[in-house]
Length: 241
Image 1 (spheres, rainbow, N blue to C red):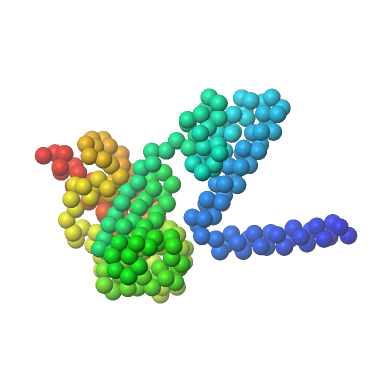
Image 2 (tube, helix red, strand yellow):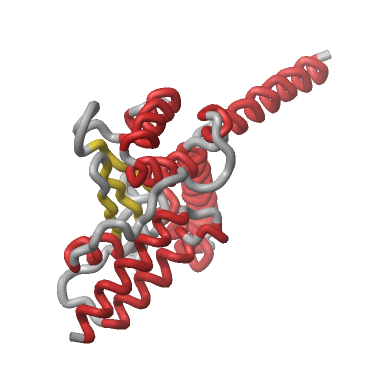
């Protein structure tokens, strides 16, 4: 009889887990999976270390620390691997429109932004729920197409299925052209996540890495891809002078 109850409990758990997985925010789900995987590797490495299998345990622990990230107590690494765990360039890109500032992390591909003008000024996009974001998108679509494009790129990454709820099909928000406004060299550096004095090789490398994440063929945004291309052109023209 206890096998029956155990089986029913397992079935209920699997149904609950499946529903949670379907409804989960992709960004939050990815973070959860990294956390589970990281702690799993840490525990496994500890068991191996108790058996004296240090050559296997240490690399496994370092990998677990990398998955857990900076907030973990193991972020500094282990033994000969100390200092390598969670090593990151911490490189980010920033794109601004009249109403929004969006930040893209080069390592994770995560996007987040904040409202810099108009209603809600100073509020982070991650602080808003889906209905509020769709309402914001609808407003931008009518009054600021470039901000609508930028917000659409964020929604595509963080709120799967939002387009159906907003009553629009696939593709970018209509009416925006990334190259409408001139871009200064300073803005171009921010878009590619570079600093003053970046070499031609740095520009090409940053452009290539960003396009791998942002190209429309890879599920990215046409608007952001155009901004990235524009930034590269601006910086290469400046370096050629």
